Image 1 (cartoon, rainbow over the protein chains, first blue to last red):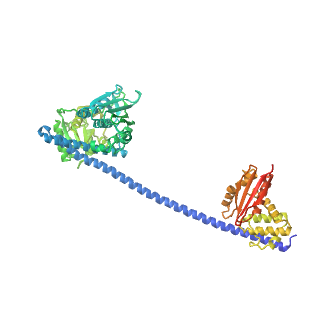
Image 2 (cartoon, each protein chain N blue to C red):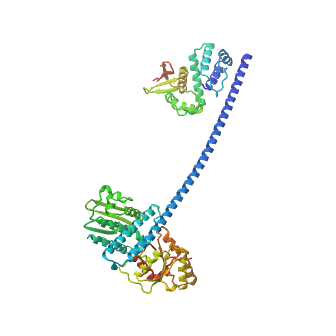
Image 3 (cartoon, each protein chain N blue to C red):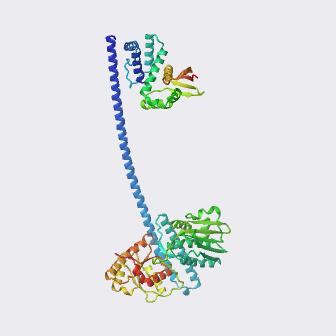
Length: 459
Length: 181
């Protein structure tokens, strides 16, 4: 048997050990609680930081969106502001009768016209490029005749080649014919750009243009090829030429002019059309530029109204029995347009704002064959005026609605839609050229019967 | 040193000798803790040396033999308390190689205040493992006892050669383990 004192000591040791363990446990519990508490506080502070940061970022995002909106707004405004005076300049110059000028004056006028045209081209390039960069370039999907488009485009640039004594050959494959669906204006823009470049950089020799189906006959991909016998491009510069603001050679700008945006715009447009663009070149021998575009063929039996490509006649046949209403608030524009209309032999009346137009049509609509309607005007703008005219037509159940063609300096996305939505029949951007105006009037005056059937329903 | 080393020692002395023997050696030693141990506490490692020395004096058994015996016991207790460390190991060499890189890492997680010796190893031959013990505690006997306990546990025939290369400072002992063919 253990003696009593030893047993007591053992019990004491066990008890003390237990107490020690309990104290340790308590201390550990406290430590654990504190650690937990610290974690909780940390989590709370992190959450708060996340919230603050999120709020900050939201604020910054708002500012960025606002800045972007302001930029778009500015772009739209500049587009309008620049085109309006350009309209005045170009219109006025074109009205000068060369026969009444001496040769020195005629030279000066020609220089002024050339400069104004170049400026307009540059403005258009910059606007196009800005639109593409902002993702705001919308391509149209309308039916057009591909062969006429090619012929029109080629004949428009042919005189330039003739001036330089270049041989000019166009080959259109028999597989290319009939109606296709796409953006005819943009196809024309790319083709014009490539051909103009070829002419610009070729001093002698020839320009060959070939248009063919890209692969099998079933493919909608059309390949346009432009080959010249010009300067050619150094291999190390080939990659650069489709890049914005770069030309193969810095001296190009000084020698040949241009913004250096043309091919950059083309290459982006081609992508939007589901195609590709490329170049093969050898310095001193010439270059071959090509692009493809996906242009869906139209079933011949379908009866969709064609947005046919109008040939711009070199001489403007006067219109008989055609009387227009010109609605334009800006005095300069009014004068230019009036003179343009006179020069193509159209009689017309003038309204200075939308309200005057509405009133003129209300008194006697039948005397007008067409309305040329400015979009932005004081008192009553073109959209609202059109809406009122259409409403009146609905109420009085007229058999054929009057064609209303928008004349606007707005070249931004959505303008065409806005005009159509307001009930307008067609759309022209300023500055308006004589040929375009003639073609537009011809289109609507001759088609007014069809138009009445196809007009967008106004609610 | 972790309290478990002391509580296990006390229990072993109670079992193998008697509760009176525990009381006697504690009374004979001047221990800072007063011989009050709990497995969750931490105590000065010199106390275990003092207790073993006292037990050796009382029983006339060599201190080193006592340590080896105790360590064999301790090793078996480890395999019971932490079976997870033994689940994947099936040989002495495999187990000992894992001590530094795995087991001591796990021990640190459970006991951040534990001060652990360093065990590195070399394998000069397929049938040989050189385990190098380095520690400021100079508990080479405990290390050897545990190695022996390990060999006993896995029931293998392995001889141990001990080469003390300590040269002042920390202990540096090479244990060469050779499998008996």
